[in-house]
Length: 191
Length: 191
Image 1 (cartoon, helix red, strand yellow):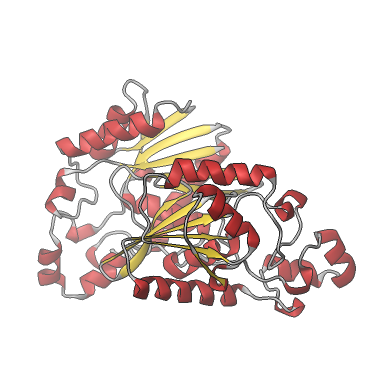
Image 2 (tube, chains in turn red, orange; image 1 turned 60 degrees about the vertical axis):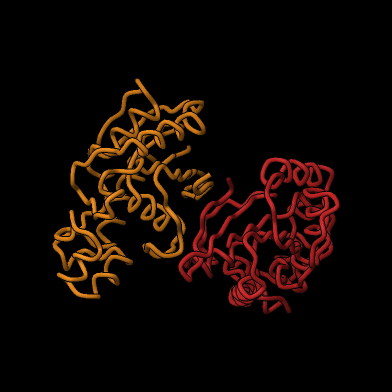
């Protein structure tokens, strides 16, 4: 079994360089184009038994631009890490309101003080999605998701620390994981 | 700067399911073909400033086949992890001689019980190579090496544990690392 994770294309949030979280930002024109290109380069010619997407709009738009007409299932399991009250706000604005502790929380990806999630929460979701994938079966599964979720999957499968993981995850980056001999492993990153 | 680490093609010992370690084994015909293909598909268009190779024959042959005529410098820093007394033996032979603890040690690359290297030693050796490349001032470097070294580099850069689990490293796998803003990042794994 193979699991493909694709990060959404550039969103309005990415373009502004502000916190996204569960905010419903749309793709920019550039993001739509990135999704179309990713679809052609990585996904066309591949057969997927099941396609999933995070229910956040930027992931859904990516799915629809990458694979026009595709039937897919949405799940909140695939969402980005929630940043709670920091949603749709810049770092400057957050620092102005919360002061120095904000930088430490951000560095540790701990958004619980703001009503959001922390690294453990996202990794729990990633593990749950992995179990869901295993029990649903199929040879090749595709899921449109977010950077934080992909980072969490690297933690669950490879043991990469969520807060440290120095792994480049551009818009429309892809990760391919393979389930073999009872265990998951990373096959490709950003091919 | 960019660093490309390339695992050698299939060796005679890979094909026979034997631990290769520091033995001077050659590529099989399949290994030669794999090396030719990775050169053609990925490496030949890239303007490398410098090419390194482990001084073990299988890595040197891969360099010569993937990038014919390019010229390279060998270094023992890039050698595979030394597995000591299990070198030249199959898994079955090792289990018979050393007991089932062999499987645990092999998984986490702890070869100290067999007179070989262990994880901290390999990580130190690979860190030394990464520092050398970082300090060279070059833009783009290729290094033909071994699975243990690719995994160790991944471990040093991302913080994941050094283990056979969690990451696939087929023959002629390529790992691309970038150095910028004072740190290394993984950009691609096995594209």
